[in-house]
Length: 335
Image (tube, rainbow, N blue to C red; front, side, top):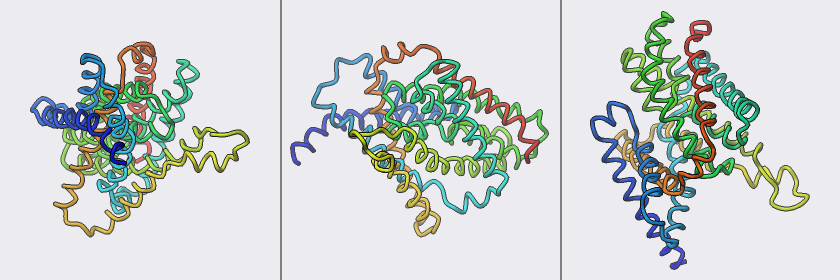
């Protein structure tokens, strides 16, 4: 046991160092203006390290893998402190139906466009779709262990969130000016279509404070849909570990139990038992844990593996971006 823990130190120290640097960079004025979160900076710094520094020592690999898998699951579980069941109730049935429709539409469209039109692997198509459908990088990271995606596929999916989420953050508020929606309904439209939570805040602030508040609630409700999404994906991508294994056993072995942890934490958060300052501390720690997982992912990603895939993943993400823009412009028909 002691030797196992000792093997984690080197990799975890590297990942923690990269994570600290990512928080420092994310706190700069330019990163704040672009709403670039520490999670995005962490994966970029990890990727930069992996492709410029000397080969990572073998002794460090267990710690990097631990951050990429175990710490990630802990981070997803405590992500539940960002949402409550009251938030979901407050958005109303129309916004909830819109969220569900967007998530289903993007997953289905992403899978078929990716696999049939561009000939991409179904795992790559699915993980790219998760970033556009639900909550950007956090959804990508939660989907990765569920469908057993490769590190370079996960990095590609995060890259699409950075590119198209940033474009949506600036473009979608301008498109809404042509719809005639009031601030409340504009917030619903943004929360249902923009990729990252931070990007939703920035997009909403371009309209009004009311739009921002509504957009964040709708977005967090969309985040909650991460749970049924990865539960379903766990069943779809479950693979037998031995011959003649029953479908139920296959599914239970692949079931993303950390998703249930996310629900339980959200339920506890809904009871409002903790003071707000304590919850903020927990959320900050959780962000650090998720950033560590992102940094570990970046360190595990080789540029050659990304280059080999080509431009098709970005074309798929671009197609999904167009669909989200069409949904945004169509929201007056449903609200």
